[in-house]
Image (cartoon, rainbow, N blue to C red; front, side, top):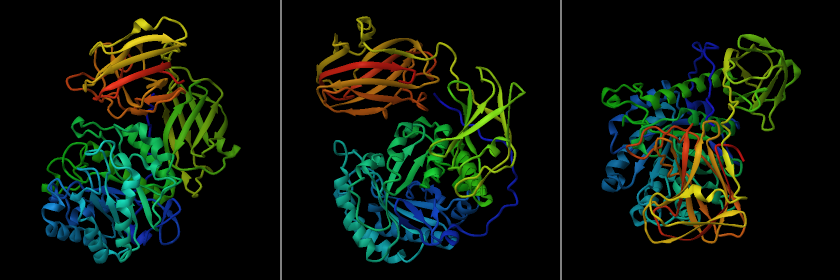
Amino acid sequence: MKKLILFILAVTSFSSIVSSQTPVAKNGQITVKGTKMYNASGKVTQLKGLSSHGIQWYDNCYTKASLQSLRDDWKSDLFRITVYVNENGYNTDTARFIKRIDEIVSWCEELGLYVMVDWHVLTPGDPLDPTYSKSKAFFSYMAKKHGNKPNIMYEICNEPNPNVENGGPSWTRIKSYAEPIIAEIRKYSKNIVIIGTPQWNQKPGDVVGNEIKAENMMYSFHFYAASHSNLKVNLTSVCNKIPMFVTEWGIGSAQELQNVVDTVEAYDWLNIFKRNKITWSCWSYSDKGNTASVLDSGACAEKNWTKVNTAGAFMKKYLVNDYKMEVAKTFNVVKSETDKDGINIILSFSTKLKAISSENTKKFTATINNKPVTIQSITLSNDSSTISINLSQKINLGDIVKLSYSKGSMTSVENYSLIDFTNLSILNTVPPPGLFGVEDNFDDNTLSDKWFNTEAKLFTYTETDKALKVSASYKETGWLPFSLHVPNVSMLHTPTVTIRMKSDVDFMFRIDVADVNGNRSNMNDLTFAIKASDTYQTYTYDFTGKFFQMYPNFQKLDQSNISIIYFYANPGKSFSGNIYIDDIIVGKKP
């Protein structure tokens, strides 16, 4: 279910709040202790900023004036210099790139901005490939030249990835690349070093238990909001085990040409960062014009550093508002919704709350269809980041619910205060009757005729031991699915497909969906690696924020009328084996 994030309208004026301190003046030398960044005063800190695009392509976007605007107009703490090695980058003219990087680093020092120098491993994706052989000399120079500055950080490998080798370099291989580079940097600088993790920085879990033994060491994570909602657990499961730094993320899609944004997902990610004090830089401070940039086309030539596109408007507003709230020591509601039974209002915050008391209840008022209702109790969640407000009346589908809060004792663990708000509209998430999805556990023999294959007659289906057995053996390398026809199920409220299955072979398994009009999704990033096993495992494919990822020439998918689920075994490659499906659930929670 896509849950709309509702932010409070004008609540408090911050126009008089200013701070003359630069980010570096405020925080000083940043160090890593445990899993968090600490400033020079010993306080856990979170930096927020933007990344350049390739400086070989958007060179006119990076001037002292543009960086000053980034600091003053955008309220950014951090700037990431993206040093492509190939792609007409560093390897084409080492001296020119060194001179340009030195210039930008010096401007950041003058402006009090933190700066990260990114060795942009991309194609090929193995940092030990000979094309990256200059990395040690590059970082030796950077550390010698700038290593005593409190604002510089070194990102020594952007995105290890499988552009060349099948599966991409393992963490063991990435670690073997990183250790000598770190040792070289440490001869001249103690500043923070960041290293990429496997699969485009999406598998930091591979690092846990096999970390690099070095001080001021962090591990990077990358994602794009419109493509990677399913990767949140990859970050949240490790961010309190190893120090994480999101050195690159975007509001749009990982496929730039789709030119879409998902601000709902972006807010969710930003709240994860906020709650867990994860530092980040957004891609990218350039005027490419699509969602891979935050400036509109022509902004850099015009020297108009606040000429933003849709992604930029979102990012700038977030940074400025977050800065104002940090200065004022306040926090706000980031998500508001009803629970599934329509009895409670759930408010989520970007911070953890202190214990709440009955006094808090008196500070809230609520109406349903403009009629006052009694707030009976408030309960704090186990993770202290949400509260459940119990009402005296059930919320039904179509009800207009509004909530107000007057200044009270609701405070965060950092002693920040919840700001006042009036008539916050609450999204009713109670699903209407008939939209609970479908499930079949294969306990009878009624499903076989629903399974078919539209691409080629490659799969056979038999029912055995109250499970569906799908068998195939083919060498074709096209994207050949087997499919399930479902009775026009809605995935509006629960946009997931859950499968309980096992297999006698290892393979990759992904899903697409199609609506009654034949429009079909393109969910390349919804893929699981299935291991051969005698035990059934449960896999949930979450389509939140992904229904606009389409194949070319299709119209927007109608997620309220899904009629076909497409399953790909080893997409694009050969497959030989048996898959056993014990249960499948479409459009509802298991």
